[in-house]
Image (cartoon, rainbow, N blue to C red; front, side, top):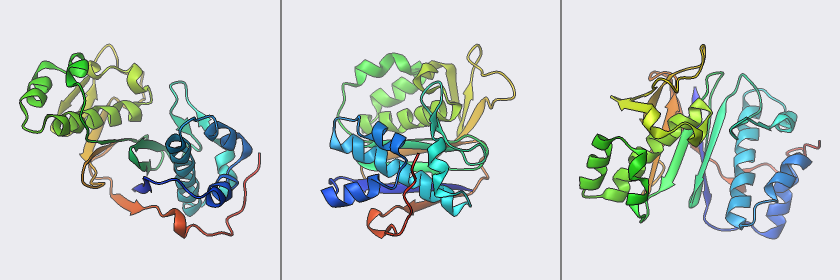
Length: 232
């Protein structure tokens, strides 16, 4: 089972609520969050960690599991081997996918105006033709962008794995030679769309098409006040 959690990030929390929620995290996590300059990025980082913490607690882990939060070589964080997760945030929205032992990747983007020519070299010619001839070019672009981005995030190498190393066909994204990871790491991903609201595009990358997925709204206002503080 893969759980996808969504949270609104359009407005800043009150100072009191911010402090209350921030103090639920280990001190090391609080320090990382406070390094962000924009309130939107600080708040997105806070929400994402709360999503992971509460999801893992529902799966039987103690709240203090967040103390083991460790960024990987390419920045993808990890907490425990039996619950893989991935995070994305864009303007107004934070999203987190939590699964089992198999890696997952998720990417969400708000559809917006861009100079699309800046990204032309990233995509195969046939995909770029579809984007450039679409009646909704930005929407088509972000539809493909989130597909590819979810796959490279699931792979764990992020954008250090170039899009041209991936072949997309019939819902599958496959890593091509010479970019394949060493065995037994997964080399292909099932890509599926996730409906997160009007004006956004979102895709999930996972290991199998039959794996069930649930989407849940994560409400900060509904978090229990009695949640214990985790200290490093």
